[in-house]
Length: 384
Image (cartoon, rainbow, N blue to C red; front, side, top):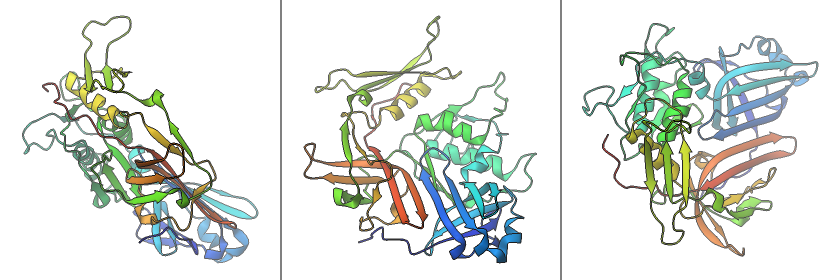
């Protein structure tokens, strides 16, 4: 059985853009602190602090680090756990600090230059409707592999490291222009956040891998099964009805003028709760009833039954004996928790949303955040 264990050491390597060719590496003893995290549907960050007096052999090279030309790689013992472009360096008389963001930062700094019309029913069409994860990969590849403004194909070296876990339901997505030939000039990451995440995309990074996934359900295999003994500190169990819903409504109606507004609805009328409606308003233009249904379906996940959350206080973390390895702590995966001995004793599936790691003179602390898991509504959509 895998266990988290205690890190014996952390190492940091500075690579050239692309994450393969090393530039420099401060001595292990020179690292005074390391902080890094993993998260879902957001860009994670890492920071290392180097004692200058113990890194004299590479001080000159540290001074030559160029944001975005160089990347930071972090190793926990021998395992690569984090990698991404350096965005800032700070130096004072005694220490040198390096800050970086994961590889989704490249998508935040690259503006879309392709048409977005994933509506065709023909699988041979490169812009056909399909799983939202496939659409996300297509948009990324079209932008990184070519175009008038590409310095070279896949200049951040991301395409070979894309991993997909497709939703079984196809999505349709287009950003309408006046003549269906307009380019939406926004960063690629904004397209993922504003348009594809609401349709059921989940993205995260592990090392250099960009994982384009889907919300886990109770049908998915758990990566680990934890008891309260796996947590070093107190925990709280919260059953919060304010986040519950049996019907999700999504509409583009305007409060002042409802003419031409459409809606999508997903969910059930519950024999336990009756109707618990949640209304989501969107001001996005050009959305069809099918688009609104896709958003409603993704929003329904984890709201019925009433979600029961597990809160781990700030500063508390996993015990070294926790039966889960760092390799398994991928945001989005299913982790089951057994809370015996509590009034709200439960055996409940959760989704891992965040991993926050700190390492320094006092050792390593691995904190995690868990959110309720649920099953999406599988009723028939409206006609596309």
